[in-house]
Each structure stands twice: as structure tokens, then as C-alpha cells.
Image 1 (cartoon, rainbow, N blue to C red):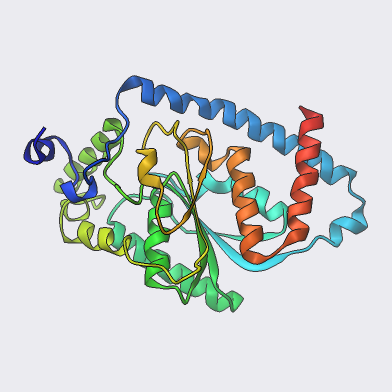
Image 2: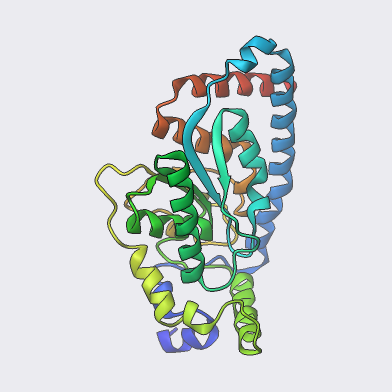
Length: 292
């Protein structure tokens, strides 16, 4: 299929889908996303085990729990809001991490404007805590984190991306691309959602080029991907600048799957050099196995 023929059917620019990448197709890919139910059940089991551990811990030891002072900013994916990462935030807070919401109600609209707002949020958090911020981003949120890390290494201590197709943002399921096309039509009708410039024009090109910028040497970057991803091309989620970590989770389920949450926790603990939190995580996992 020629590139020109492809552009007639895709609402995103050709450069957002480099050669060698293609989004998942058909109902089988979407069916893989149904495992989010299983992942939610697994989270519920983890929550019960966590509560059991909390109740079994003497009050004096609870008060002695170590708090990680370095802030962690959670950024949701496309068309999602902070609420989608609330369960992950709750778990991280229980382990002592200081988490912050992005302030995003629904991650749509101009990505450039959204990233600028996120940068202002970063500046506010960094000034308040007097230290750099680690960003954990899901899907589009991870792509925004990658761009900010390159733009503002003075503010960002490290990033963790979850199912973020940084290498080919347009390599998405046709169902998702249909939503993008609908948003563009709504923009044409006068609603400020997502215009053509954000998917095909200069705005899209700027964001694409920024996501390819080099990161500082030794910059902590973990890219979590899943071959079972039914929304994005999992190969596009492996950024050569980061450390790739594979999971067997649905795209949507990455926001709440205990396996992913544990991986995020371990990564944050390594960035912040917090061995005590890693030991606490191990105790919670023991309680979960006994509860299961």
C-alpha cells in the first residue's frame, strides 16, 4: 500500500507511523483488552492483602514508615484523566511515595498546549518540593513525559512509560484512530478538542521531533511494554534511550495491574535509592500470596 493511499485512511500524518510499525487490527486485538477485568480482580486481591498487612502492622511501626520526599507525577493516557491512575497513586502512597496528579481531566486537545500545562505543573511541584520530579506516564502520558524529560532535564529526575508508543505515535488500533478522526471533525465544528495541526501539522511535527531528542547520559528511563497490547504497536513502546521491561498486560490494564504497579514501584525505589520500600513491597507480595 502506498504512503499516499495510507494517508487517505489515517487521521494522522505519515511521519507518526514510520516504516516497520503498524497498529493492532481487528476484533482479536480488542478482545485482548478484555483481560483488564482479570487485572482489576488481581488489583482487588492486592488491595485486600495490603489492608491485611496494614492491620497486622503495629501502630508504632506504621508511624515509622519511611516517606520518599522526591515527588512523583502521574500522567494519564489519551482521553483519560487522573482518576484512571488513582489506584496506582493510592498504592504508591501506601508505600511512602509522594504522588501528584497532573491536573488532566481528559487527555485530549492540543498535545503541545497540554504539554506546556504539564510543564507548568512540573515547575510548581519542583519549586514546592525543592527537588526534581519523577514522571510516570500511561500511553500518551508517557509520550508527554518523554518530551518533557528532553525539554526540561532540570525538572525531571526520571521517567517511567507504560504502553507509550513513542517510536510511532500513530501506530494505533483503527478504533482509536477513528476516535481521533471524530475529534478532528468536532474541532471543525467549533469545539476545542483536537485539530488537524495536532495530528498532521506543525504541532504534531514539533512534538514528534521533541520525543526523539537525546536524554542526559545515565538518565533513568524505564519503558514498560506488552506484546498483548491491543491498542498500540508494542514495538513502538520500546525506546532505545530507555530500559525496556516486558509485561503480559492489556493496554488499559497497565494503569492497575499489580505486576505493572510492582515494576513501577521497584523502578521508583531504584531512582530514589529506597531499599526499605523494596522490602515493604516484598512483605505485601507475601501477604497477597497468602490471601490468594
